Image (cartoon, rainbow over the protein chains, first blue to last red):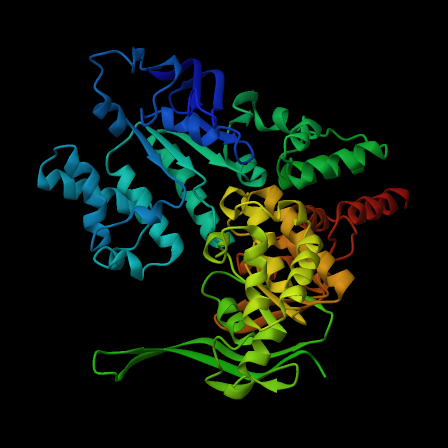
Length: 283
Length: 285
């Protein structure tokens, strides 16, 4: 059970003046239950790539296997795939359209053909999972704050019980409190429901705290695919493609350059502080 | 005399029912005193709903105080006859670049403000040139704004405000929708305007790394100013900032963790160089 991407290419406006090769020969394996971060600057192809995962975009060439089944095969049930791989777009709150939050969350499961009872049960569960309080269920989405709207939108996807949850910059535009709440909630979902989570983000600091694997995209290609510590070790190369490592990586590098006996691959504040303390104690 | 001066400023959002009767009031800004000197770079931090945007909208008289007063360059914002002068003194840049660009070509968009002020044609073009150059977007003058990146669009929006030659620019979360590169571009542009042209800057944000070089930082919560001082003073209170669930730069946090573990470091370390220097001293002794 996994997603396997083989030699995926996607070209926008093929054969026209505005032709753009957005994804170039990407091959990836995504085993069940991983928590993955995808980073890349604007236009690196990361959003195009993830839209292939639930069949929303069709590759120009290459193949995707979901649980060993080719999703481009003639008799493949794409509708099934869409309920198994849930995609949360950027600013998903713009897609809330029902008169109240609860009805909106019911839309997905209802469309899967589930009974009214089952639909409602799933909506309650999804809203509970994203931590939205019950007093908001019957409110219009317009009465909610930005962070609450976003939770409601994510609940709409969770109500379909996806096996893989893909989120495209789920914290963009939120304040630090809203950002931490959403990310903590996603991490909890990953842990408790054991779903695969793929998180697209600009923020290295955010990603470093949560994910076990980072895929760096640049010009449509996979530039790095490794653990956060190993990816951030390439901070100079990351800068060249418009990205940056977390601030602590630079701190450790600066200390190392000044002759401190420290390892430079700290990815979080705790790791950095621990490493400095160790160096101080040893001399 | 400061350029922006608020005394006991309070603002209520009033909800009316269908017959126009007051249904409810909610206080968004509560008892705020603020003094901004001409040429200052100040930053206002706070979560969504803390009242920081409401306060910002007072500075160019989009909103007027329910209680208390606000003077901009010596003019009372409640005085309706002064409203145009106030708006030319204090320009605003908002969060979403797509909501504030109206021209189909970059230079026309930047010329919109001065044109509305009745500036003679030749001077308009002169101002457009100056302001586009000051934000580093002159090469894009004949481009269509919708082909620009988010950071570039924000710089065009800033040029549009600069072309009106305001003494003060208020930026309400100008980087919230941008990627890291766009964010750096915009902040660098704003800082240069402040240094070179001595424009007063009031930056509203929740990104801590953007406020480190401000002259003064104000933290708002539930409509009130709850912390203020130089960045160093504010960032000395790591525990309080954490309690308010605001971000603290990673270097400051690392220093704080080391302090807790008994390493003798001063409070309010803001940059990598400062921390490296302090650690060097610790190691020597």
